[in-house]
Length: 446
Image (cartoon, rainbow, N blue to C red; front, side, top):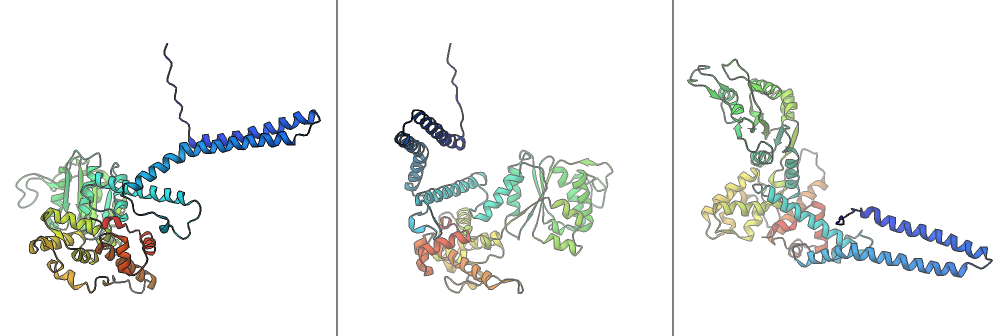
């Protein structure tokens, strides 16, 4: 006969309280029996109780040491080894928040675990989304939304300014969905004349209109069981919007000039750079279609709201056109400080233009004039326009302060000590501001 290997999984949140509760119960019962034993014999119980108390104290202390040895010691070894690897920011005592209380070592553990979690999330982002460049908090929030909605068949509406990468996000959703083995069909609603848009969407039969010499399947039919991406859906004519709504609700279409319905199984993703709720109020977009599309919305942040990603994006775009070239520090500073109204597309065009003009190093004078005109001094950039009387002075000061910090970190390639010297503040003060504005200094290191 062979002995069975019996294994028990015990939750530490249960076993540790049970151990100490058991010691408490044991001490009470033993003290009671000991007291009764001596009182029944008319003997004083004080000294035996003191001796038993000393034994219990020693036993409890030993249990505490075992807990530290088997639980805290491995945590301390992990933290120490992680710090010696040199991949974490400095987490010495001088960086403790002023309100921090309690054991400094526990605060050290907490900070190390926070940084390790942050690093792992960035590694996961690079692994799962190699086509999306960015490690800022805003971008990681978008990636998290993609992972949540991709496995479902929910309609996705991607909103964002021109050049923020809406089609890239749509491709990522398709790649992580069950439709990934089927076609990804994209159509720009703004690039097709109004008279041909319906035919491009639903297809047409032979002879349906002048020039229709053959039967042609539409984009919705070509997508099959894949993904249909409708870009700039805010430019779709109202008449076509009504037919699009019916197709989304019934999952069936009829070709132009046809009479037989065709079932479609594609997953729908739409994108727009316009304010659809405002267009609904102006009766420029159908309210029922808006509600049908507004199932899961992914709002892409403009580049000016995630400046931490600009150094990474710039290096990535330069590697695509001229991998042998590099940026001068002053050039990277100007790129980070620019507002980029055209977002990533404008950044890409600027880098391509500068790469053509530059030699081995891209200097500030190689950048387009529009970028140079908007920069006055290394740490002074025009503040973004504020809404009419809607923003307080504090909000404006926050925007300017965050911009100055980003510029300094870009100029010093993420070295916080040098950035603090440029800003004229202490390193600890800079650390507080990085936490306040959720700026990761690590993304500026190259």
